[in-house]
Image (cartoon, rainbow, N blue to C red; front, top):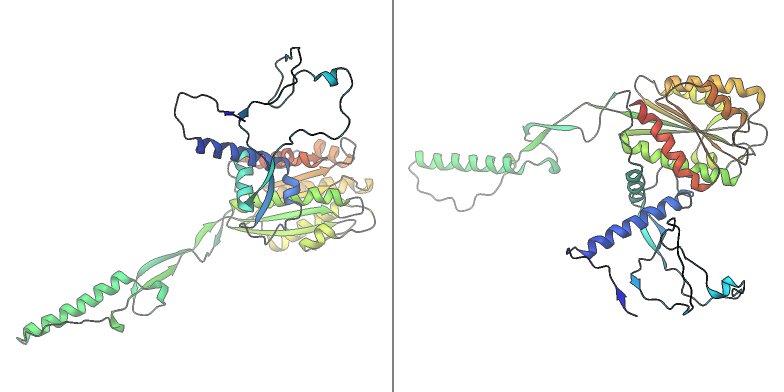
Length: 389
């Protein structure tokens, strides 16, 4: 079958254009499959070089295809998109469409491998977000924060100053030649090897650098109402938030806080897999976060990010306490985000109270119902802190 390319009088590199189109397809597939891609990933400890597979639609050229050879005209109203079909086949128009198995060519789908780091770069490039607003600075001694301060005779091989060592050898050689001249000796020096006294090493001085520290408080309702689907969405949401904050700070700590009627610190596995019976007191999770901040993370030295995911199912007697505790978290945090994974109702009672009574500019409330909503919720949450910058 003959294949025709669009005519372009200006010469251009077709390989570059194909790479651009491939990148657009990868980015589009990542956005559509983001939850599926990240739902099983561990938030902490996974290598950025780990490869994952994503489905990509094949790139097709313009080509002739067999038609119906039937009379008629198909016209659009201007709202059509690429791939839409205009008009109906004769069988469809008469209501006699083939109900059996089809024999037409399907759409080409293949898988491509990308690393976690590449996924992050695609996502955050498309979000087009500037840097987070960093409010606190603290002194951190980094292993890479060293300055060379002169030379010394003793040291380890990786710090050997080769150029300086050669200079020391030449100085010794010139000294010996000078001594021969003073003694009127015409002896030639044929071989002049290095000696231990020639070796020089860089003297290293550690440097205290001003760096930003961050801690992320992941808070989640682990009561029975948070089913597998909701935790499925929550994991991907938390993963993306962690990756974004980690890109912006040298040192990032993570605290996992699970709550039903009692808030407690747990490991990552229990955070996403353990289910507790009983009701839900949202304030218990917030109070545990505040307690940890008071003990371990001084707001004067740490940039604090708190994110809470719940389905909004909370005991009514705890709603007032939850609102007050949320306000306290806003006072000590750079950003406090509440995300509600809805089951059907537009907004829960606690969500409405948050939106009405929490006026802090560093508070953001978002909602998700299905995995396609993750992209919007992520952008809304991260943009809130940037407004403050």
